[in-house]
Length: 69
Image (cartoon, rainbow, N blue to C red):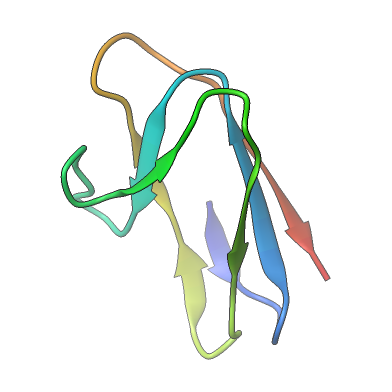
């Protein structure tokens, strides 16, 4: 996901398997955990473009997002 983040809004993230999100180069030990099938709301400031990357420890996952303005 990439692009300008709206000011004082959020991004809702959901994953089909346990995943970790964060900046480029995110790992399972440096990322923010997203539990399987448990939506997480991440606040944004709009101060700069938002880029989130995801990784899983094993297998694959479908990660969905919704920008809430």
